[in-house]
Image 1 (tube, rainbow, N blue to C red):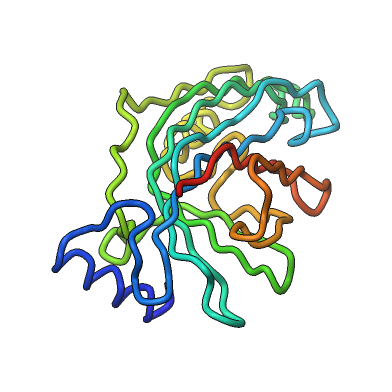
Image 2: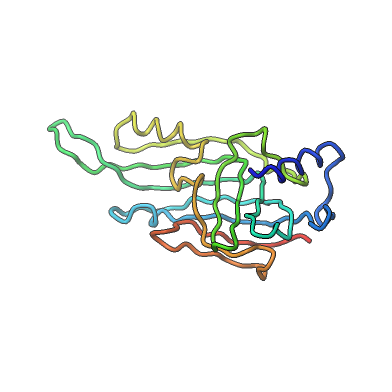
Length: 212
């Protein structure tokens, strides 16, 4: 995360967090209601993959972006996953055979969306360093029970690994570390959809609302 954004967050935490629309110098605190989604069929075209992986919630950032700098938006999203896909395992006879993987899960990851308007792209990732993650305005986070369950006919060790990796955003649609083809949010007409463009990008981003 850029030093300027980190210092800004520290300052906001010390003096009190502003409401959406509050001015921070020449910049304004802005909130976006978002939906990130990927269809199971996009993840593996070699088998009848189905279902979807979806993250919804509110991201917060400061606008307009600094000239020639990527802009960052942060928030806690709600993830819901139902994906059926396939893998391979070694049979008792020593042959590779197709096996099934069923992924169900839900969680509440802290995320960062970095938008580089000059390059026409965004980058979506989980915020793994909590010390450097804080929104410039507090938004009530979604509530619920986080869980993951992976079943199927593939090797039990592989299924257990996929289940353990769910919280880190590396299972099913693997949302952490995904590119998004998009333009600057402060110039977009809301609502707007930035669709997936396989094979370069698999995830779709929908901006549902902006405040103010």
